[in-house]
Image 1 (cartoon, rainbow, N blue to C red):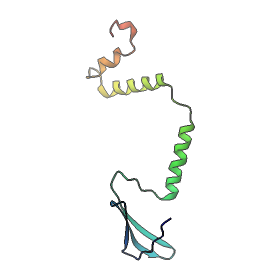
Image 2 (cartoon, rainbow, N blue to C red):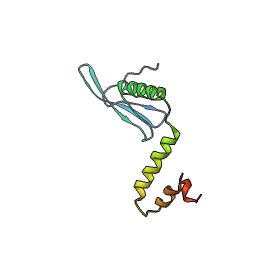
Image 3 (cartoon, rainbow, N blue to C red):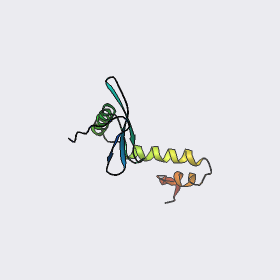
Length: 102
């Protein structure tokens, strides 16, 4: 672990694009400002640990039924297109074996 000392107003730069600046020191708290590109996610450690735990739980859940996902997606497309919409005819043909169309 790299350990650095900084005063209020001073900063450190990480990988040429992330800046962490000391904004305020008051009592036992230090206020930091983080400047980072939008693609970089910045979380407090306790929030990050909750995210990891939630992801772990989600990965352990039973996988979704592919047929049920297809039905849900088809329904969402149908609702989004509306009656007579561009996709409505296509959705009605998917899985409709009695229509005689493929």
